[in-house]
Length: 304
Image (cartoon, rainbow, N blue to C red):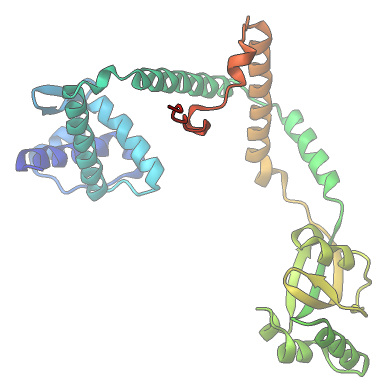
């Protein structure tokens, strides 16, 4: 990239700091630049770059930059702004070359643009509709109470000894029967990462464990250990259940955003359903059943 474009990239950094001011990136600036930054941000139709005589607006770059920032999960820094602007210019020059080669008339491009426009319009209307859905406190509390009722179950505090062979697990059980301490045996024999901690698994919900493990743990009483080895895909387990307790539900305030989001999704589903009911849709079933082009077998040459 030539020096002129690099200079434009530096200017773009100053412009984008105004656009994405929520992150408050501080860019060293000359007094004249500081005065400009103090003014209202430039309008979207401001020309940010002219490439081969074609002008490109700040609004277009803002959109590209926002998507690039989101996709990369990067921070809004002057360095990233310059990187994004260079990528933006790369897209411009390659797109201009594509036009020069006549690729703009490719039918697939038309379909892609039409599909992208539909998807963007769909996203915009869904965002707009979601912003109008404001669940009441009573609705939120109702969902919260329903979820808390489903959480009326136990949590378990346990230890385990994991070995590779069933016979080895049986030997461990015999040593437990003989009075050996579970923690000592776990440190001596367990292949699992918890072995060094005496096999301590801490507190957990039975659903967090693999089925074979959880099916056994829910039948045990505190203080007991398994009298037969338990097999999972990890090996053979000897399990000691130490304590149980009722699961503490999260507070309403801590899960309120999730409940609101769920109710908004529910509202959007209803909104889409209503649109579909009103829509007059005529489908060609035979075409819908067609195999996608990329999945179709290659045509075989005709026999001579």
